[in-house]
Length: 283
Image 1 (spheres, helix red, strand yellow):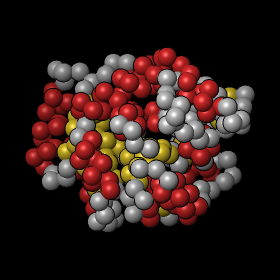
Image 2 (image 1 turned 180 degrees about the horizontal axis):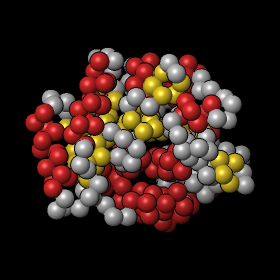
Image 3 (image 1 turned 30 degrees about the vertical axis):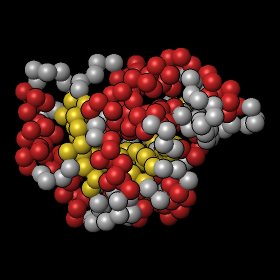
Image 4 (image 1 turned 135 degrees about the horizontal axis):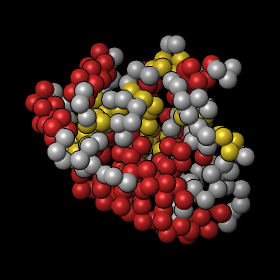
């Protein structure tokens, strides 16, 4: 089994962008990639139910689900081929999963999953999540699991995303949203993981402001000097992240172009060979 939990220094750090880019790049290498967003909050309500945008983005990046039909599992034998062709994916290697498998828990309120669940009268079954994610990880080369918010965001009163990673025996990749305050957030996150005996695979810096922002221009070098944790790359500032991810979910030629762009982004700026090797290495 090889699973990797992707967490961030905060909400808005760029977890979905980084996870989607890694998924697209590894998929382009011919690897079988699974993706998961165990719980997504702040989901808009559509006619066919709550729509988890982050989960849909990841699934489209990994080519494991067709974004053309967001709320419905594949229901016919012809669907995988038709959907793969529409997305520009090789239909001989594409796999298609229901979005429910990617994101089993969806909530309308933009809150920590524990509280969002409580507000609709339910709880998250972490043990069931661990069983499901473990089974999915066995079936692919790497299962990329995106968290919500940061390391200590609670799924239940007794379990955070750090606990989920520990229960899965999965390493964690930290996405550092580079802005003023990121150094403190990054060091606290790394320390929190280590004190909970969670294996840290490394960190990726995501620039949230263009060149000329003094904090962003100096954060990466400062962080590399303050921690021995593995630096796996730095994404440049992108002005059209939302548009790119929206295109990815849209399907067709636009999705193919967005997937290709994200794959190139990760290949150029993230140490994918080191990431894959470390993800498969046991502590």
